[in-house]
Length: 314
Ligand SMILES: [Zn+2]
Image (tube, rainbow, N blue to C red; front, side, top):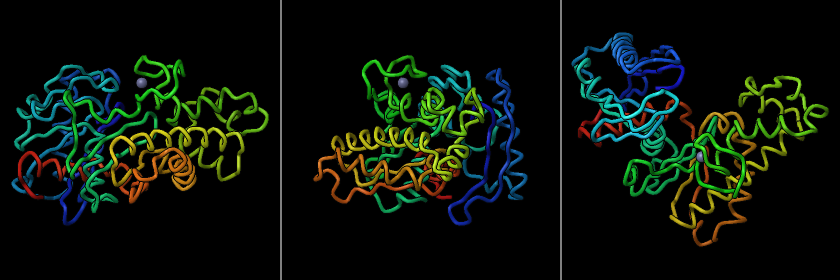
């Protein structure tokens, strides 16, 4: 589920993704609207797959917000406008398959752990860098959800006292400094941008400056863009080093829109800051790597979620 659309897929571990479906969501969708859209898209995806309904083992829902997968309650999902909503129970009344819910970043991390670059690793940090910065932790092969299902909120680690204001209301959060949104904001407020960077002419409001536009500027060796990207990567590497020092994990995976578009440029920059800051013994054998599953990571994560909660192998 996202703020503007719901993407659905039918998947199993042998064939991968068999069918996809997509539906737009209105910005002022009510709880009832969401349940209707989810019911419809579930049946549409199954119908596109051509599978008999008896073959479907579970419906897994990835939610951009805090989620208790045991009770099926959304605590807060700001981009969906949902709060304190027992979505699982409501949806279960409309759908004949077991319904499971999980935070979308956790689902993505499960996908990466079981079907992506993390297959052979036990202890992972996964970071998704895009509009914001999401994080998830896997210890001993399992998602670490925390006491109130809030673990992994790496984007709100404070990295600059009195730094830029974050969407969460605090100042100096990691994502207010190193997300794509923050990088674009810094590029546009840089006095050199108008003269030296084409980005300034492209979109004064910043709305149209997506990851691909930044990647294009880097390809054209736009110095202003590269400098701001480097600053963000420096902070990202520092945060990754702090996590390594704290948890001594064996893999850090970077995903998300910005990494997909610019990973080859950013990963070496992140690594250089990481190795500068990490205790060398905490980084022995720790791999820093790009995710390869893109948006499908969360879809693959559904397979792992079904196994964890229902004991079914699909
Ligand atoms: Zn924040």
